[in-house]
Amino acid sequence: MRFFNDRVSFSATAYYNQTTDAILQSQLPPTSGFTNFISNAGVIENKGLELSLGATIVKLQNGFTWNANVIWFAVRNTVTDLAGAQYVFLSGYTDGASVATKGRPLGELWGTFYQRNPNGSYFTDANGFAYVNSNTGALGTTQPDFKASFGNTFSYKNLSLYVLFDASVGGKMWNGTQGALWNFGTNKASATTTTVSAVDAATIKTYDGYTVDTAPINGNNPNPRNILNGDGTYTFRGTIGDFGAGKVALDEKWYQGAGSGFNVNAPFVQDASWTRLREVTLAYSLNSPGVKSATKLQSVSFAFTGRNLLLWTPYQGIDPDTNLTGATNGRGIDYFQNPNTKSFIFKLTVAF
Image 1: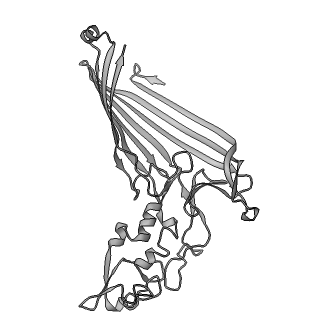
Image 2 (image 1 turned 90 degrees about the vertical axis):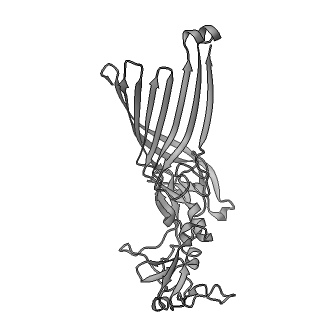
C-alpha cells in the first residue's frame, strides 16, 4: 500500500511452509558399532510475518531528502517429527549443544543443569552446594522473539549517507567461552576477593568439604589456600553464595567443580538480544554534464562503507550474532568465537 503521493509505503507478508524429509544426523545405539547415520528424519514447520514501512520524511526544494525504512519480522519454527528420536544433534559438544527436539523450535539448546526440588529450589549436596543433574535437557531456544532493522538515507545533491541499524530481541545463547574461563580462573568474576570473620570462616564450607579457615591448596600441598589476616579475619579469592542451604564459599574448587562450564551448561545460557550499527556508507556521485563530456562516462561514484561499527547487548560473551559452526548448522553456541569483523571498504563505480 502507498499513501500521500508515494511518500509513505507499507507492506506485509505472512507465510507458512512445511519441510519434510529434512536431512539430519540421527543417533544409533553404540552397540551397533556406530554412533550416528545420515537420514531423512525431520519434519519442520515454519511460519512467519514480515512488516515493512517506508517513508520520505523530509524532502526540501534545495534537494535534501531523508528516506527511512523500518522492517520487522518474526519467525516461528517447530520440529514436528524426528523419526522416533528424542532429539538430533546439530552442532556443539556432548554437553552444550544445539539440537532438533520434537515439539520444540529448531536449534534448541541442550545440556546439563543444576537439579531442582519439586518446589523449584536447588537440590544441594552435603556441603550446601548446587548439585549437577546427571541427565541432560532443554536449556532454552535460540529463536529470537523478533528481528528488526532501521535504515536511513540522507541525500543532498550528489552526496548521500546511508545508516543501518539491526536488532534481534529474545533468544538464548550458550556462553561456553565464559564457562571455560571460569574453570581456568581467568574470567573477571574469579578476580574478586572476599574477607570473612573468624566465626564465619569456621562455618562456611568450601566445595571440597573444608571450611574457609582449614581449606588446603590441595592434597599434596596442605598449605592453606586462604589468607589469615592480622585481625583474625580470612580473605579468599571468590565470593559468598547461597543455594538455599546456607552460606558457602565459591572459590577455586567450586569454579573447577560444579561451577565449571565443563561440568554444567545452564548457568551460562544467556540472553542473546542485540542491537548493532550494521552499516554506514558515505557516497558521492559525479554525473554533471561537464564530467560526462570530459570523461565520456555516464557517472563516477565513490563510496566509503563501515560495517559492524557498534554493538549493544546484555550478552556477556563477545558477540551473540555468531555461532560455533556457522549460520546453517545449529545456532546459539559460543566457544571462543571471533566477533563479527569491523570492516571498512572503499568502492569506485564507473557507469559507461
